[in-house]
Image 1 (cartoon, rainbow, N blue to C red):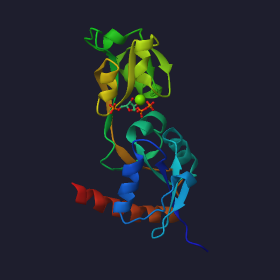
Image 2 (cartoon, helix red, strand yellow):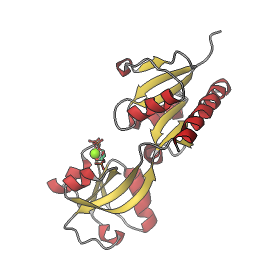
Image 3 (cartoon, rainbow, N blue to C red):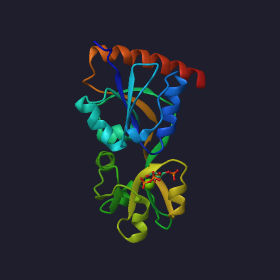
Length: 214
Ligand code: PRP
Ligand code: MG
């Protein structure tokens, strides 16, 4: 019987990709490059890497078709509250924030009551507003969210803020930080015992890398 491999999902394109590959490499795991293949095996560790779209990863973990993933906590909070969150990996730090046009005289979250908010993070916004006793009209869009106030689609937005440059370029100001996020190891609730043992080896190596970095 061939030895099982741990199946890990990594973001195919976007902000996490390079650092995800780098942390694996620093852990001594070499992966044949070529993410066009969407699936690659390591030559020196029982690991199979799948390159997937960020937003699809929680479902793959839930279904158990991948065992672990390197993903932003923000995505798990939005779409994968049932997924086990493992080690924080120290990269891809960002915030998920509410922002309004610079001219908006913002005093408190109450100012957003009854307004339109454009976002790719509807669950996160809903939970946050509910906690504050605010109701708003959410417009769900998948990207370029910061354009929404300028084209009259919304009064405010909620999106990821990293450098703050997208907000600035679109004449917006951050008014509420809903959560802070970084890349984490996410673990499928359906991982098998055999693969869990490989995962423990991976976690041991990742911990050494992270310790060495700080
Ligand atoms: C992401 C995110 C923000 C921006 C934040 O967008 O949705 O818009 O980055 O980064 P910053 O604070 O450093 O500017 P991305 O460029 O990935 O495009 P998308 O929204 O169209 O997916
Ligand atoms: Mg964006």
